[in-house]
Image (cartoon, rainbow, N blue to C red):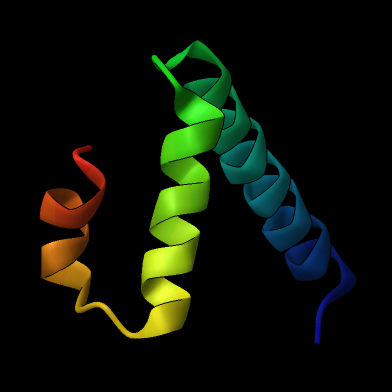
Length: 56
């Protein structure tokens, strides 16, 4: 593939990771809610029920 395309994809992914990290750090109990969402998804809770389970 085109090398510039890969650079663009990496830049966009880095931006998304930075935005997600900023949202977690600025949220109230962000790390706790993030770990709750991760545990819920790993244990098989349906995606639309994660909000109710974790109180997000």
